[in-house]
Length: 362
Ligand code: SF4
Image (cartoon, rainbow, N blue to C red):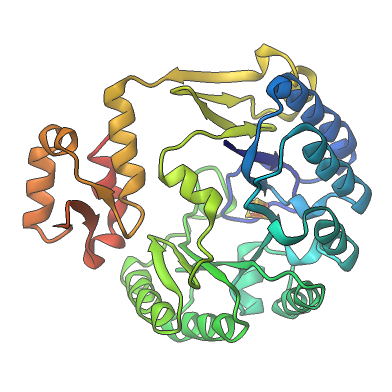
């Protein structure tokens, strides 16, 4: 059983903080891009892989026209064994989602569909500052349409630590989000990525305010029924993201599309990110830009680093204990790591500074 990720690298406009592989103003290439995805899938699916999860991310997958979306979903249906499919996540932004696309998702993937909508926050002023091109009203309209069409597994993506945003404004966003009762909420701290407009303008995050926002989030959401199951992810019971848990469990997955990463048989490989090169090389071996065969030591380090992102942590095997004795002792003494019932996990106070801790294991 495998998990499949498909990358759609098109956005109507580039947000001011984002360095994901996504291009604006290249929508004319979308039909050609779907042809290329199909070629890449043909090359892969000689075995007609059985899939447990599919994740269509980006970029902005909802930017595809209804016809292009239908075609992409049919390519997946025709080339993989979906008998045991548990979840099919589709990422969407409010400005490009509509009733017709929602109906196509429902028609072709019905019960498995999981919609992930990028809201980021409820304040239109901050949305504008982020370079987002939707309003909170537009989000509400599309969220309501999805519910009316019977989509019963929805994630809302949020970002905190925005320039000028105070704790009260973030609390307001969380309260309005919870009132909608989505099944899942992701809340990430703003990261002005290198080379972005925010980076160029030296926009930085106030760590003290962001830390208060994170603390509030990790108390408020669980108090409202959302289990805090990963550093930045919260879900109602039984609604954790199955696909992302494959990544955090360091399990195998196939990535299709420009810049997509695959992890199969201990080899991690990454497709070219350049759109022109991807369109030219999809379906050929030259598509892979980087490839690394992980030895046992690297695999173990990644298993620990990824597994500790989950609040339930990892099983503390003898191998892990002996390889990381010093690091474990240090962080345990500092109150950042805890061990109970033969499992090791990050403590609450470690979560906001987890990047530094996790990096020590690889
Ligand atoms: S944040 Fe999302 S919508 Fe904005 S540019 Fe990046 S991928 Fe596109």
